Image (cartoon, rainbow, N blue to C red; front, side):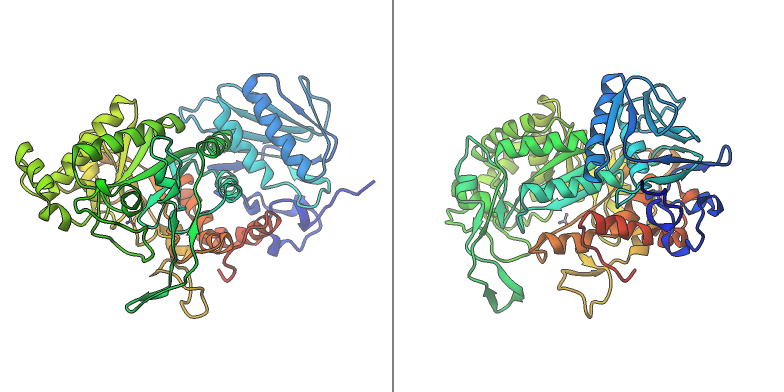
Length: 533
Ligand code: ACM
């Protein structure tokens, strides 16, 4: 029989500081869970041993779901597990759905006694997060593990903890999206913003408009590095899209991991791939080609009745696929050149008594918001949707710094902070010498860690409109899943502490130490990451 390991190995302790051969010597503050839990306290001295053959105690439906999730996890490390209704005298994890006296619907308590592990939460979310904390303390190698007796009480600071992924500039397969979701869940991130349409590719099957994917999902080539002028293309077609069945599969996979999926269908700009498929939606006759060059394109949807019908039909299919409340409609970087020159656009301005093309964009977004509300959904847009007047119930994603977010919150709108100064994971994290080609910028791990999502300018009353923060992963220069991972990790770990942990439990020095263990967890999950932090 294998001996219980008494040192380093298997507990989520700070690997580098673990010279001791006994857990009891280790401070509980050295437990390396990310994001940092709200409180970790020791209630009595001692340890418990958990090993293969353990019993998971679960009775209610939510408890059984978590038990099955854990069972799958243990199967990966070759542990056998029994699921039962009653706890044995040792080596068990008891999952209990019960009130734990917190108003926060994601709160949990994880208690380790000398006999076993007890997980408690009012619902499946809290139970799931307790399990994420637990599995960050479990072995990578299938050995038994000795855990210190302790009690973790935890709940998130922000309700919205987001990660975005641009699958349009480069397409990534379903399996990678699932891995991304797994890693989000591991760090308790709960909103996946899926950027599905762009100038350079339309990535979601829409049954009423098959050319969106037949034509719009493939570009003939991609510009080489930053060869804008003179333009150099690589001559290699790039394409791909998700069928509606695949979308459903991903949404279900995310839901099992307590992640809401927010689809982004860009309008009125970043729509060249759609125009290539259906040129009649533009203000000029076309023809249009799916984009091969990065940047902002002047060809955008014309605000015609034909366009609104198209977008409503597209959104009608989209809302059926995504059960969450939010639909993201983009709204960013829509040059007004074509609208200025278009008789159709100018007629709408006149008919609606609008001042200019910015008010026309506001009219466009308001119309779409009305439609989404009629479908029981809420609209999110990038902060450009403030220009010309915000749609009445819109949520704003503040990306050009925080000013848009502050303005929207002051108008009483909900806000998600995703400022390009700290939340753009397409920016360099080191170098740039020695780093792979990136879009630019410079955002270190510590920049992300130190970010405070609530701007000082906001009154106490308006602070509540900041739902949380999100990092954006634009993939112009990320051609491979390995490269995406390299740009995301470990910055996502820093973000997870920024959005989950209260400022008083954040500690940059401790976070850096925890990375020693966390990098082993990333290695075990075959996740690529930036190593020099
Ligand atoms: C954006 O980065 N254009 C939202």
